Amino acid sequence: MTPPPERLPLFPLKTVLFPGGVLPLRVFEARYMDMITRCMRADTPFGVCLIAAGEEVGEAAVPHPIGTEARIERWDMEQAGVLELLVRGGRRFRVVDHELERDGLLVATVRWLEEPPAEPVPVAQSELLPLLRSIVDELGDRLPPPHAFDNAAWVGARYVELLPIPLLAKQKLLELDDTLSRLEILHQFLREHGLLPKKT
Image 1: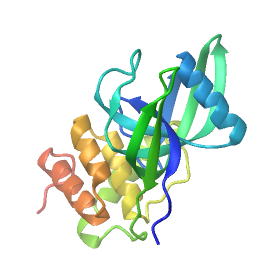
Image 2 (image 1 turned 180 degrees about the vertical axis):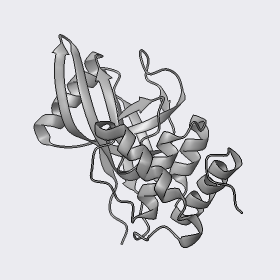
Image 3 (image 1 turned 120 degrees about the vertical axis):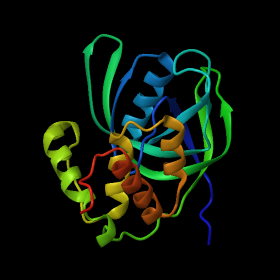
Image 4 (image 1 turned 135 degrees about the vertical axis):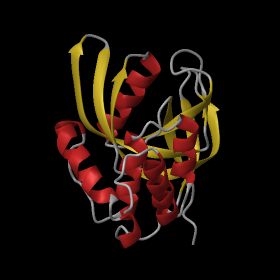
């Protein structure tokens, strides 16, 4: 049975958030400060979508229809009027409809996308793991645990976030339901760009 759609405030950005990913945010516009305050009080998420048209600041941007819920893990306000957040990506969703509130905040009706069951990285792509482990070690607190190197979806998502791939390509990879296909695409990209050892 398909679960009913839910309401979710949206934060359109020029970035793509994946499930399990962490994203630092600086919030200063009144509409988003209010949204974050409500989310923190109620311990509820908001949605992050890549901007399809428009800008992050000013008039409401048009979001891509597939996004990821964001849950607030840490917040601080060292500078008056500027909220520093660290959010972590949760479930993916599809925007069914959205409306603009009077303060310019986009609120969407969303359906959660079904995620495939977790599976390990196939042997054919196992050489992706040592490189990712070294990157995670180097990033330290910028990519905090939990880490899931035994989960192909987690490994693929972290590579998409870290690699210099155009935003539209990252969005297409977010929309891809087939975890192993995503991993194969990334494996090929890394090999073509000389980021993996050459086959002997």
